Length: 515
Image (cartoon, rainbow, N blue to C red; front, side, top):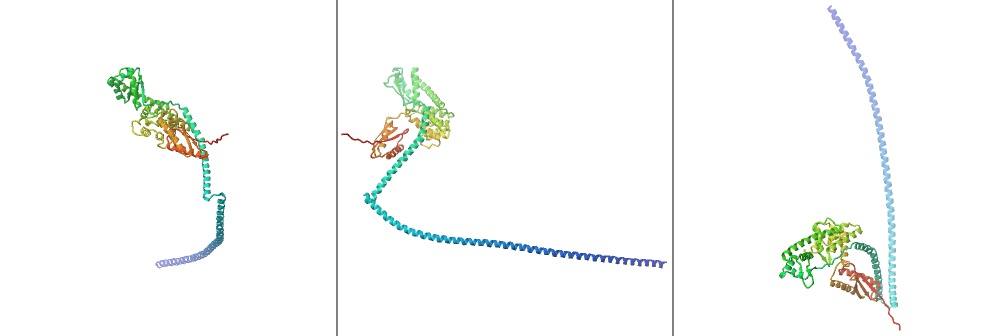
């Protein structure tokens, strides 16, 4: 049993081993078969890869060759282009060289031709000089004049012609200037003067007070002259009591003091009480009245001209000009007239009328204090205008109205013109006979200093100088030049208002007698 079981187990084991080994051999066969198949596939893959790589290699080689061929073709093309440009450049250079050689040859030919011509011209010039000398000699023989004499005659002829041309130019320019400027200026000035009718009052350094009777003279003098001394000390004015019937003369250079004395004396005469205490009281009251009148005169001047916004101190100074005179012309009336004329001229020219009137009214403001302070009325006026902050246009007009400073605006020029018009017009100012006579004499002396002048006369109150010339010595052309020179000398050497006319008269007479 046991042996049977063992035998069975042994058989089973043997069978198991057999089965195991049989299974293993089958697996090995399948595995070998699979390995063979894989190797075949791998070989196929490798072959495909090798074939693909070779194809890629061949394609790459082809592309490289094509690229190299294209590069070579491009390089060959560029080399050809460069070679063609070089050839063109060489041809152009050759052409330029040929042209330069031709120009050099042409210049050489021209130089040779010029040298030949120069030699020919030198020969001709020598011949011309010889002929010219023969001509001059023949002309001297025919005319009977030497070369220097002929030259003198020619220069004289040229000088006469130049004088004639100069005279014609002077006449032409003078006529043109008169036609263009004098007409317009005359219209403006005449219009301004016609529209401005300011009264002129001639004043002096004395005032006359009328008395009711001659007995009043004694009362004014007082016991031992105490009344007149008191009045003179308080007012600073000299009282002249002489044989003039029923009148007392007040003499003083300060018109304000003279006005105070006049008002005080008239009040004392009306009151009848004349003694030192009363005189002191009346003089003080009269001084206050004059100060109020001064302020009112300044304000009235502003209203009359139409100017506003001036500092009160300047208004007071304007009123003081009521009692200031220049050559007998009232300074305030003169300033008002200048303001009106300046405004009218500014209106004609389209300028600022109010500023023009303001500058004209204040142009002589320095005259209100020039007798109290050192300096000219121009400088004092400039200082006053700057002190009270007047516009720069006004300051420049004040500074330049007598020509001491260049005018920087048209208004300043108009103020200077209006000042001259107001001062020069007839009846405006009173001048001394000596000054007037000296001016006339100086005019005649200037005219008589010129060669060819027979006699001269200053006429029309020095506004015209008439000059008689010798016809044989002064021609018509020289007469025009002489008039221009005399007028310029008068302008440079003399000071005068307005315009002086230079009138030269050249008259030829032929006289014979019937026998």
